[in-house]
Picture 1: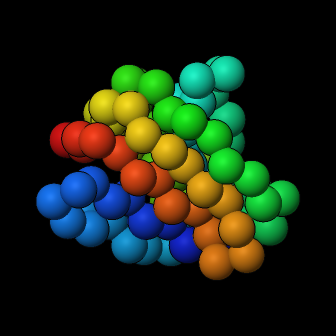
Picture 2: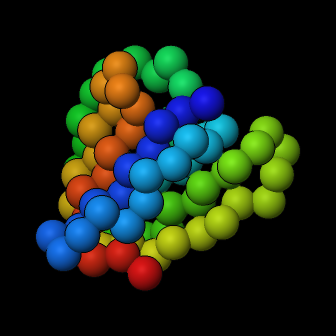
Length: 83
């Protein structure tokens, strides 16, 4: 499972184990699974899709710009606003 955190300047909104997250990067959407290579990307206004299980229906969350970081601990999205 992938550890996923969604953070805004106000608070930590999510910290959970998920199957995959699709992120609206400024260079295009990208999916992150467990074991993804480390990288950072800017994030555009859009929708993140959170898949709790493989093949499941995603939960979606609207976000406004920010950054996404993938490292050995998982995926962290730092968004200006979410919800």
